[in-house]
Length: 116
Image (cartoon, rainbow, N blue to C red; front, side):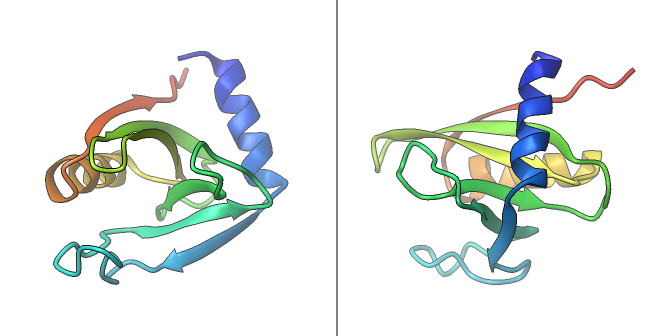
């Protein structure tokens, strides 16, 4: 994955307000048994494929910026979306991917930022 893409995502995250509307431990609005393992929200003032703000998971590695992105395919909604993984540790990236794939049943691929 290109560094230019991650730099652009860093810029979007740095110039937008992060809104956490589903804090870690809260239930998914459509699937109450699905509990968010990380803070989940969006970048205010941005637009994603679904017309809402760009979705994100926020982890505990404050200052790391955008460390990965998940591309998901939802066959029920018949859409594809990108979700930013902001300030996540390696374990938190794996946790977010497992939540999307195993808990929510979404086709999920995660691209991690290359670090030198």
